[in-house]
Image 1: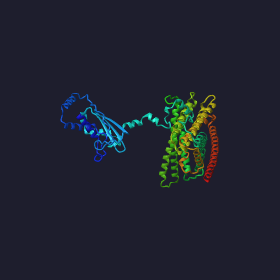
Image 2 (image 1 turned 120 degrees about the horizontal axis):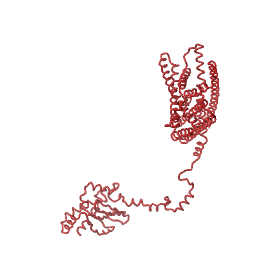
Image 3 (image 1 turned 135 degrees about the vertical axis):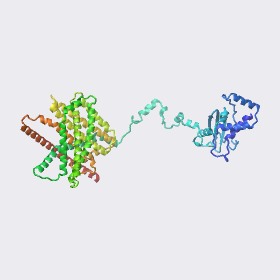
Image 4 (image 1 turned 180 degrees about the horizontal axis):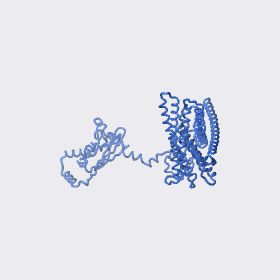
Length: 591
C-alpha cells in the first residue's frame, strides 16, 4: 500500500506545475519514462522490504509477461480542492481525453477546462518499467514533440486531440449539419428523378447558355467568313495568273524592244534596273526550259507509278512540302537578285566591278533555285497525273490524305493575324499551282490518251478544285474561330492585296503576296511545246518555220489579250474596293 500511494503521489507531482515559477513551455503530456525514472529514484530511497525483493525476483524471471497492478479509481476532487502546486478542477464540462502508449506503458490524461483554471488527471498503467528507464534523452525529446502537435506547450490550451479530427470526418455528422441538402445521397431515387425532371435544361451539367456574342460567332463561322475567305483566295489566284502572264507576254516584249534599240538604233546606254531584271528573268527561264526539255517525262511517270514502297499520296505530300519551301526561298532569292540589279544600275564607276560580280552571283543562285523548284513542280504534276489516270481510287486517296492532313496541321495550332494572312496568300499560290498541274494532265491526255477521255478529265478536275475549295473554307473558318479572328480581318487582307495590285505602299510590306512565276512557267512551256509540235504539218523546213511563227504569234496574241483583260479587271476591282474601304472607315470615324 505504501508503494501504491507513493506512485499515485508521484504521478500527480509530475503533472502539477507552479504558474508563478514554471515557463509556458512545460508540456501537458510528460513522458512515461520520466515518471519511471523518478519512481526508481524514490524506490531507491525507501529501504527494501522482503516483499519488494520477492517481486523484483519475479520480474527478473519473467520479463516478457509484465503484470499490471489494479489501480483503484481516483476520487474526483471538488471545485475548491487544490492539487499539487495550484491546478484544480473548476467544472466537469469540456473534458478532453488523450491516450498514448510508449513501449509497454499506457498513459491516459483527462483535461477538464473551466472558466478559472485547468485541472488534470492522469491514469498510469505501467508494464515494463525497465524499458522506459533505459530510453535515451533524444528519444524522450522526440516523444514529447510527437505528443504536442503544432509546437504547443503547457496549460492544455493549444493541444489538438485526435477526437476532434475524427469528429470532423464523421460522415453522419456532416450529413446532419447540411441544412440546404447539398449532398443528395440520402434522397430516394424517385425524388432524385423528379428533381432532375424539373431542374431546367437537361444538359446543364455539361453545357452553358450562350449570349449574342456566341450567336454571332456561330454565324460568322458558317456564313460570313467562308465567302470572304474564298473571295480573297480567288483574287489572289488572279493576281498570280496576272504575274504569270506578264512573264510570258510583257517581259518578252520589253526584251525585244531593248534588243531593237541596241541592234538597230545603236543606242548603247547604261542598262536600267528594269532592263537588268527582265534579262535576268529571261536567262533563268531559258535555262529552266532547256533542262526540262531534256527530261524524259515518261520515265519519271513509270518510276512513280511502278513503285510500291511509298504510296502516291505520301509522295505528293512530300513534294508539296518542298514546293512551299522552294516558293518561300525563291522569293527571297529573287528579291536579292533585283536588289543587285538596282545596285549595278546605280553604282559608280569605281564600284561597278564588285557590283557586277554580286549581280552574277545572285543570278546563278536564282537560276539554280528556280531549276530545282521546276523539277519539284514537274514531279508533283506527274504524281497528280498518275493518280488521275489510275483506276484504283488513287485520286480519292490523294485528295483525302492531302487535304485532311492540311487541316490537321493548321487548324489546331495557334496563329496570329499576320500569320493567317500569309496562310491565305499561300493558299492562293497553291490554287494556281493546281491549275498548272491540271494543264499538264490535259496536255498529257491530248498527246497520249486513247478513246473518250475529256469527260473523265473534266470530272476529275472539278473534283480536285471543289475539294480544294471546301478544305480551304473549312480550314480558315475554324482557324478564325479558334484564334478569335473576326470576318472583317479577311476584308482587311483583301484591302492590302488590292493596294498591292495598285502599287500603293502599305504600312507593312511583309504583308504582300510574294509569288515567283518562273518555275511554273518552265513547267507549262515544257508541257505545251510537245502539243504544238505534234500539230505542226509535215512540210519542208520553211513551211514548218512559218507555222511555228504563226502558232507562236497566235498564242502570244491570245495570252496578251488574256493578260490585258485580267489586269484591267484587277485594277478596276482594286480601285473600287479600296475606295469602298476608305468610305467605310471615314463613316466609322465620323460617327
